[in-house]
Length: 252
Image (cartoon, rainbow, N blue to C red):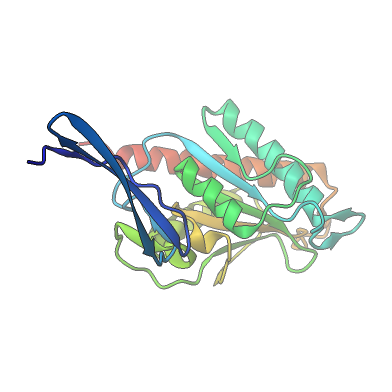
C-alpha cells in the first residue's frame, strides 16, 4: 500500500533540457526515493505582473545604453556610453533625494546585453524604466515607446514581446515626461520604434535620447551644464508626478 507522495518544487532550466522532479513514496517500513526525468522543450516565457496592478514600491530602473566595447555614437569629444552613464548617475542622485529606490543596469564602463538589461528591469519590479541614450542628430530630447501592438495582460508572456502588455502605461509615462521637459523649455520629439531591450521589459518603459538643443540662438550642447541640469531635473520631476499618479490609482 502506497502512502502520501511528496513532490518538491521542480528544477527547470530555460531552453530544451531535462526537468528533474524528485518523487518520494512512503511505504510501510521504508522510504523509497526515485527521480523522474522528463525531457521537455521549453519556450522562454516571462511571468508578468498584470498592468492593472500599480507598483507597490517607488522603484525606478535606469538603463544607460552601451558600455564596455560598445561605445555608441560619438558626441563631440566623448562617447555616448560615457554620456549616458553620467546622466544615469546624476539622475539616480536626484531620484534618491526624492525618496525613490533606484536600480541601474550598469554603474561602470561595462557591456550589458539586451536580455540582461531586461532581466534586471523585470527583477526590479520597477514603477518606471528609462533607457538612456544620446545622439548628435535631431533637436532636444527624443522619447521612444516600443512599437509593439498593445495586448491584454496574461500570466505568461513571450520574452521578446513582453512589453506589449505595458504599452498603454508606457505611452502615459512618455506623455508625462514630455510635459515635464516642455515645462523646462527642452524641445521634445515623440516616436515609436522597435526597442530590443525594452520590448522584453515588464514595466512602463521609455527610451530617452538626448540631443543638443538647437531651438534657440544660444545652442546648448552636451557640454552645457545648464542643459544637462534641465534635462535631468525634468526627468526627475516627471517621475515624481508619475509616482503621485500611481498612488492616486491605489486609493480606494
